[in-house]
Amino acid sequence: MKLWERVVEAWLRKVVEICEQQHGFLPRKSTTDAIFALRILMEKYRDGQRELHCVFVDLEKAYDRVPREELWYCMRKSGVAEKYVRVVQDMYERSRTVVRCAVGQTEEFKVEVGLHQGSALSPFLFAMVMDQLSEEVRQESPWTMMFADDIVICSESREQVEENLERWTFALERRGMKVSRSKTEYMCVNEREGSGTVRIQGEEVKKVQEFKYLGSTVKSNGECGKECIRAC
Image 1: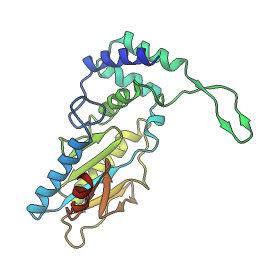
Image 2 (image 1 turned 45 degrees about the horizontal axis):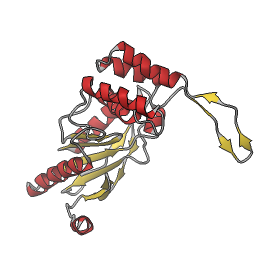
Image 3 (image 1 turned 30 degrees about the vertical axis):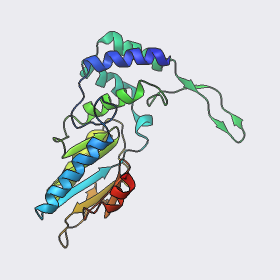
Image 4 (image 1 turned 90 degrees about the horizontal axis):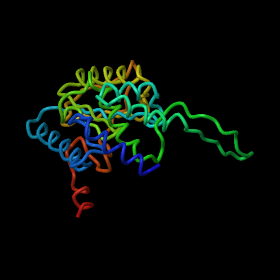
């Protein structure tokens, strides 16, 4: 099955074009590129003594939440030939699982939502789904950057980043995804006094002075000494 998944993935990569804002699971792109772009943007605003507002969006169980009908829709919208849509549908049609617990094991049942865990094909399918779901709301890089389900939204004003966050939340949640209110975080670079907070549908987003973005700690004051030492 793994070999067949690789064959299908190779064909999909030839016909599906993923947006430049996505850094995950694509050739010649990595976490380093996304981290570097964010740090350069932050440094530019610090040097200009201007505020930069960043929201780090967390999706709850992103792989497990992808609705199957959305997957088929996104494949077709991405230009995938119907025969390949049916090939992937066939892989998912046969998916079944069991649950083991303290009192034993359940009967086998069909899995009807989410991408296959551990599948060689799933990362690219997820990138394709995110590409389509975010098409109407994402901005140019580096104002919007994605690494799989790790999303960062940046803006020059708190009001604008809050508005963009609301648009992202609506776009994703109406299609079956879920933005975590407790794990999504907001950071203001070069903050002036009383710049305020950001909300999702009336619920305040946690405001932080630093955030671990793709394994690298970014700070609102731009300090990165510890990161440089760790890298060395």
